[in-house]
Length: 189
Image 1: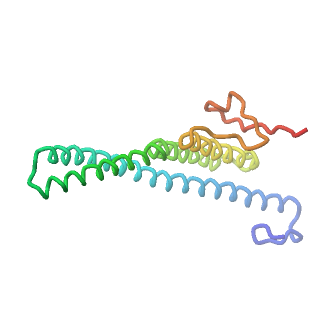
Image 2: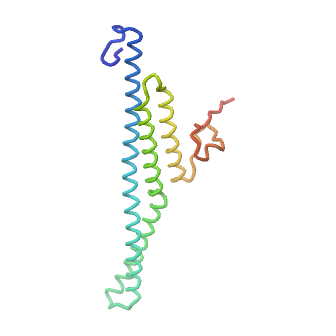
């Protein structure tokens, strides 16, 4: 087995643990970098969707009002019929955009993605300044996974109204708030 380019059988026990510690630290740091990159990228997409949804809502809302006013102004023959057709189409478009905006909660998702990326960056920075002997790699991965799971649960709360616990898990009252405690497994009888 390789560790840092060295075959396990050619190094002493202490050197092997040191090499695995370096690789383990790199793995944790890489996982943080990957998660941070994901949350920033998704945050940018949610920001774009939120802003375009808002822009279109404002513009279409104004245009619907204008077109409806023009339709009721008694325009010459061809224009009146055109306005009578265009007005409900614009209103339907406005309703569709409003429905998407409400359903996907792009504004709240943008905020949560940015906050999660910033939390992950703070954890990554804390790991970067922690010496190897003080660093518990398993605990660091658990912390990363809990942050990601908490955000995922929040996403489903925003989009679907609630985050259902997977089968076999029970959510305690502390998990409905901002607690970082993981859901507890129940044993089947």
